[in-house]
Amino acid sequence: MRKKTFIIGCGRLGSSIALDAYARGDNVTVIDIDENSFDRLSDSFAGYTEVADATDAKSLEVLGIHDVTELIITTGNDNDNLFIAHLANKIYNVPNIYVRLNNPEERALIEETGIKAIYPFQLSFEAFSKLKKEGEK
Image (cartoon, rainbow, N blue to C red; front, side, top):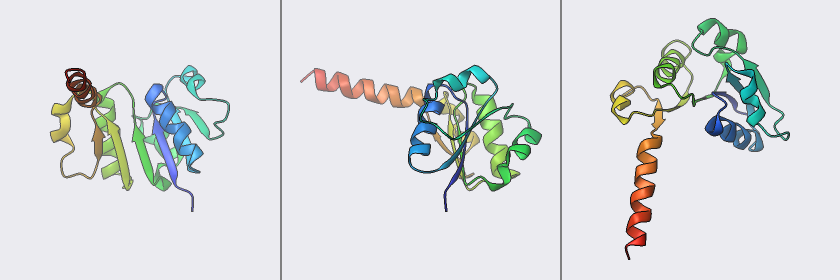
């Protein structure tokens, strides 16, 4: 059975994840409030694109959030990302939720929820530190 994946936010990260998930055979729906954001998807992407406000529960219901097995939230707004993640977790019981958070201090807001997060600042800092150490040899 194919995994039903919703990706919210079609910036560089969201579009890259969408293309990867589609290539793996997932049933992918990309949701963004700006129709022009879908231009980031290559012509090889044959998943679904939906212009919608993912902070609106009714929009998510119409798009089929009840059947989603994986939700990936990549907008640039931590407050929106947290709200959508908690909505999907508490109301719709989405089993796998991944969220991008710019502020690592917001980790406390998802502790013990099962929501998994990445922190671009932290990842960039760690990569920079590693490069710097390698350059000092």
